[in-house]
Length: 153
Image 1 (tube, helix red, strand yellow):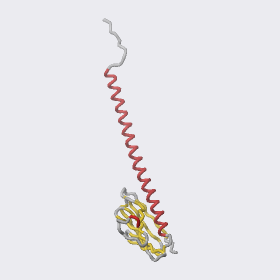
Image 2 (cartoon, rainbow, N blue to C red; image 1 turned 180 degrees about the vertical axis):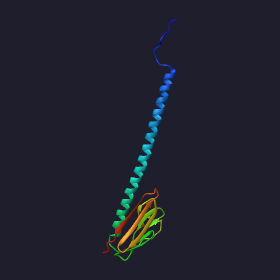
Image 3 (tube, one colour; image 1 turned 120 degrees about the vertical axis):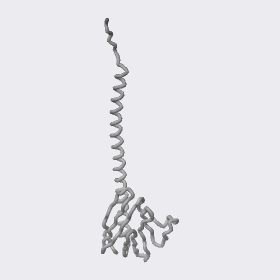
Image 4 (cartoon, rainbow, N blue to C red; image 1 turned 180 degrees about the horizontal axis):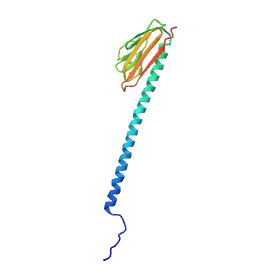
């Protein structure tokens, strides 16, 4: 009796190769997903730090622009201006805002204030001599502490 050698691939060989391919693809997919999540987290933190840096630039400009005196409490900065009126930097909910002179604190009058930064979980301010210590923390846990020298005119 002679045995014929068949040419081709059996069903078991195809299933085995598909199984190995699926294992390789799932491991590559899990590496891709991990990398993508790390990228999103990193880019979000970078974005938060950029917003915080911009907020501190705005704060420093406002604190040192035509200010006669600066008063500080836990979550409020009062800027006494040359026109005998006060500007305020306060935390309103989760938004750090700048309220200009002769305006009200009413949330319904959006024209009276500028939003400096959103998603703020804490805003702490203290003053010692001519140095203002500010700490802003965002909801994601990112925070920056900075000292601003007050230049009184």
